[in-house]
Length: 322
Image (cartoon, rainbow, N blue to C red; front, side, top):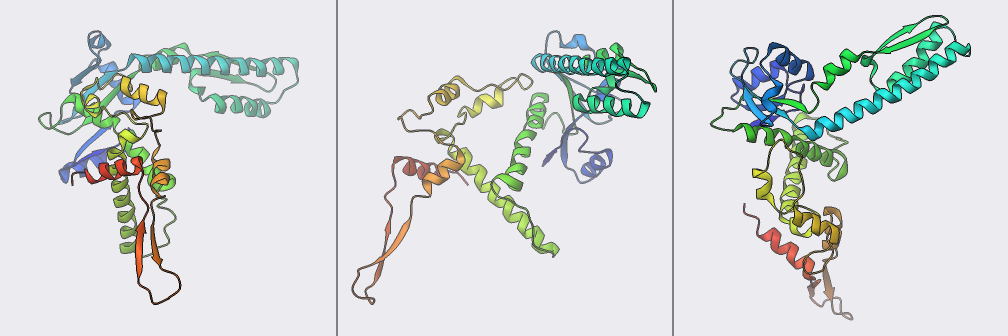
């Protein structure tokens, strides 16, 4: 079993415990740890000139594998976002400086509160040096901090204790990215579909049983979603996902884009999301009937005749291999 956790979620103590219990694990380094690799020279940016992924080792991570990745598209997005936030913050701080200069805003406390609102809004305070006085305010952009952060744009490092013979570097990256699916599963469990909370039990064994049943229900839901991919707005080319570039941004296949654009299946019937498909299947009912006039007459059941969509959904469910 391999445990996948977001950066910072799997602590050093947790890793030691997982290793002691012989569990595999995958996580990612924090930005400060990546910066240390750059400063040590263990991670050299020119290595990304010909490829977007390579594996390395480091004395700070004995017995572990580090897989460095650089996504140019992600780098461009982060650079654009940072530039926009810095420009917006600068514009707002200019307004504060102008108010202080006009005398409409004074007092270090009042100026600090107004400046704090600006910084809390755009979350780039680390890029600015501030000088606040009783009747003065000034700021400067820390270009060194901006450049330091920009050096990490699009760069991330996967950290794992799984042996190479059990998992390639490419698969380590793919499995880490699968964490988004785990997050969607927890969201589905907690709020969207299964609503695991609130838990009204108090005894430990009953709480465990409640969680187990919810997990089992999600496991069934996952199989249903996989079986019904052709009926929903889902990419059916699963093999392509296992072989595509693990670092490059995920893209839908042409067939999936065509299907989504038409919003119909090849036979012309409309596509569904999981919820609307369940609603369509819910129209199949079993009616227990009795010939009127005599309460002693035997009863018999009549099932709704399924339409083509319902029949296909049942066939796909029956085809699931245990």
